[in-house]
Length: 202
Length: 202
DNA sequence: GCAAAATTATAACAATCGTTAGGTAGAAAA
DNA sequence: TTTTCTACCTAACGATTGTTATAATTTTGC
Image 1 (cartoon, rainbow over the protein chains, first blue to last red):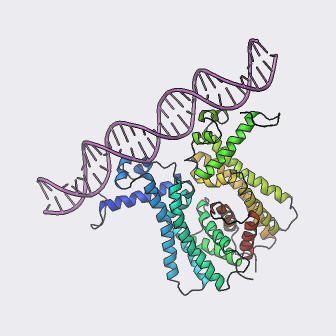
Image 2: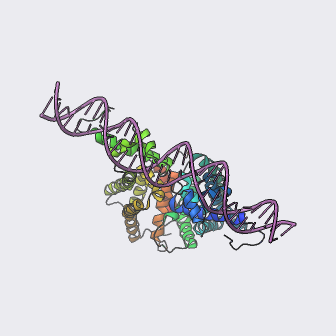
Image 3: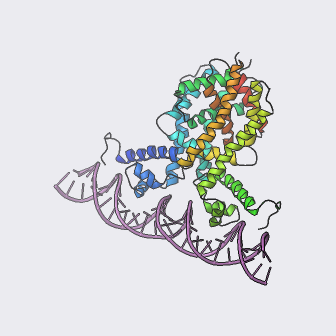
């Protein structure tokens, strides 16, 4: 297969990226256990054995996808926050929400694969992924701490719970099945409004 | 194995319940794909073939657990709501939150198994489970509609999004790994406060 | 165009999967 | 006691799993 590719990138890299991309899609739709190497190979127009030229094992392939899943979200959020360095804490939080949701719902499946498969992946992988998760969660811990320091969060709100509430409602959007038609920016807007202003009329 | 049992319940029922209970635990911890019938049998001090005396197939066993998962949560919530029939809409929502969280975090694993495994279970099972989910979600749709009718929810809040936000943050508590030490009632309290009053100081 | 290197295919392996048929031990019923 | 039924076991089945060694095929460098 002679795919179009820039002369400076090796076929190796193209195939490797394709395998990662398509496997991520299968992981999201079928889960870790139900996605066999033969499924993956078929999705890549290859044979199962050939995958071992690119990856040491199925688990190594899956782990790379899931690690990249968190890393992509974190990188997007951090980049957006750099662009809003001096902004008020609550604005920064709203931006982080929007970027998190946008990244989760873009056409790539890395972030979704991480969220969907985390609980079902072998224990040793899961343990290594935990540190990734923890590192990204610290971004939110920091955002919320800054908002509190600025007096923007009431004293009786537990920041730890608030962090999980925000992350939880965002990640759960992957379970939305209906044709909600809501775009990530609109979700972020609603989520921000609910979380900080409250659903009650003021 | 002659376990203690009331004379009017057959050993059949006891074993069946034990299989359901322990399989639910395995599903939560390992996922659908990684939980084999031999795993299940071992957890029940039985052999794999014997499971077919009680269940028609692995999928029938799993489906029963996951169906019961939603049904238990729904039944608990509905019962609690009956007990608070005349209460203000927002109080009823707070009660529903508390019971939902309590049921998810009690010692049985049916609800958690449903949430954890839904995305990875065979498609035909998932399709049948969808109607269960939908029926329970209607409880929340109704709760929120009543609150809006009572003027307790601001006009620019999308009820559909709010519903998923609440359910999402509650179900995501299953992913909390840390020793948060927070009891379900405290989670419910925090979630209710954030969702309806907002994290901002008033 | 030719040799070397890079990439994929082939074909099998041991292990494990869900499932089934037939057998067995013990309790209940007669 | 004898018979019947209940609950489980044994042992295997075909299919599928991740994985590997080896062979075939492209692609690249000269």
